[in-house]
Image 1 (cartoon, one colour):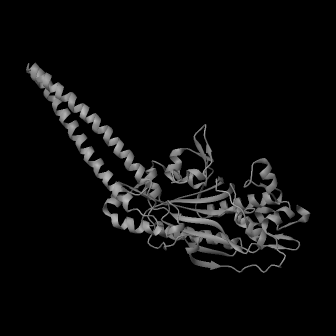
Image 2 (cartoon, rainbow, N blue to C red; image 1 turned 135 degrees about the horizontal axis):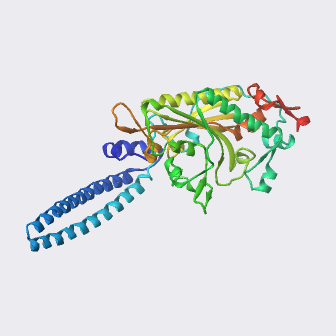
Image 3 (spheres, one colour; image 1 turned 90 degrees about the vertical axis):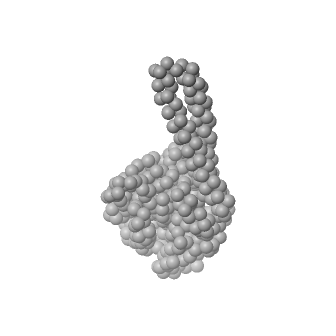
Length: 427
């Protein structure tokens, strides 16, 4: 949520920058500023009425002591009127604050100055690409056919038990999943992150805090009886650890990592873009989260970007990094880098990670602050990144490392899998 002070002092800048996200904010920003002025005016009127009522209360006591009963009675009548007026002003103030907050949450985060304009993912800027495309034979198989051949992932069984987008991992497929999770967690621990195992359900306040609610309500699974949501990513419970918390400046940066299953009700579609592991309703992911000082957050974003690139190098996957354009940037993000790996069998790039800086947008919604030498609390910056999401990493590993006899596993995973290849003998 954007800060009111910023909007009041930087109206034109906010409107101009939000236009990069293809969001026309002029009318909404003016409405917010107008509501804020009305809030201030009503608050002053309420304060004046309460001050008059307090002064009158003291006078009534003095009048009674002086034996001026008639004047005291008139003063009591006036006091009752002031209290009723104050009650009406308080109601008006609360209604104005509610309207103001409703309008504030409609505004997306302001994109960083480096975010390029654009309308869709076709306009994202490729800033880095490395790795060689694997040279495979003409009869290479996509990962869903490899999964069936080596009996490592069962999509049909998942559809039977739950529905499309909920696969079973079997045998070496299950062990590969577990190996990747442990590899990603160990790498994060070596990089100084503290591991958490979060709950998979969150309440409404947590969803609001990180910006999933009300923006992405339709994409989340909802447990109606308990009014809880299945998490779309571990970012949500981990960042909400610090909701309504004031940290010490010396605590920063806070570096946390968590593995979790993730759940997303993405709209269904058809074709190769969503086949197999390309799009799931339940998937596994390791997430890194940092709480950082505003003066260092973009340096930290670059560090996180380089860290994720290092993971892909160790997995020996060709990858590229994109800076998202305004039209593809999320509601809450100020700047996002996407990571894509190349799928040799599908001959396309697959997104496996996003790393983002939200600046104070989430912190303002959560009231996440830190206190420095000045003693005055200020909002922190929040950042997170997928390190990494498993499904498309697995898809690329299977497809890029296949040969006629099986699938090779990158050497970085051998001590985690306990095997170097997937083949028919081990199926």
